[in-house]
Length: 360
Image (cartoon, rainbow, N blue to C red; front, side, top):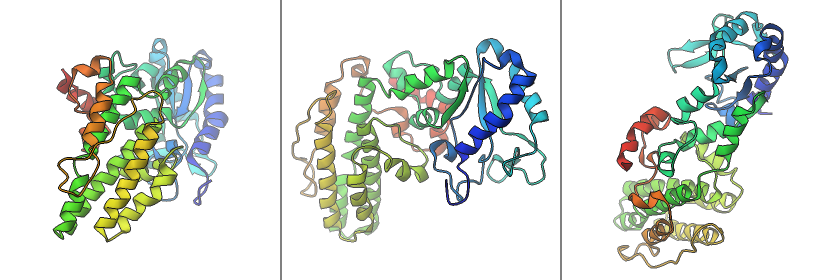
């Protein structure tokens, strides 16, 4: 339980089991055993990160209900029934939401006006809307699927799944990326790590504090994303959850996290560069223990001007060269969500899908 009260996931689970499910059973028996209900997708409560600072939008008694395609016509009927019959409050929280013009999201109603926060659609439409695809047909198709959506759709909890359709799709994505897709994303992240890390020491030597710290920030972000990949765990796009999800990783994060934090606080750039070398060495050593990937060799960074010692592009090339499938036919440009930085794009699977033309 958070310091501010009940955990959102517990609230929504009880809301479904005590209120929504009985109403469906009593009023719409034709879908009683053919729907799925869950708290998945967008929201801090899905990841278990909700607290008193993350209850300003969407948080409260809510859930998503998914129907088979054959029952699509019941979506609006089901919503109208629930909106009419669900009581105004549950466990002390309003069940009605209104749209906030300030944050463009639903917030709990103070007056009892508004509607219940229950999104109802079909399972296929839901995944199509959030991923741009239900199941990718090729490795290249995977490159336009936003990683943050995969985290959200495999997080949270399924409260009920009468047909098993939602469970089956979630289990497919919980297996993580196919091997070559994972290698491609991993190779790109090692390549990206090469871009700024050498400049930290060089800018520091020029007493260019702002540039050195900017390069350091970019480097630390890439190291965190690389750590997610090495753990084979999906990473969030929302910056405020990156640290929390990072420390949930089973490997490396507890070891290198405090060192990463100290890099932000250390005023001595030379000391910071030494810490980064230690971190990167640990990442390489860990990667070389993973059975499914080539054991990489380390060589000096020839263009470092003496400020960095490890050639990450060489590591990236070794991983990329081990790819055997169709991703070997395209250049190492990374997955779409690895090079897009606009948050609106990262949260919109349809916009990301439009950018997939770069792989054609």
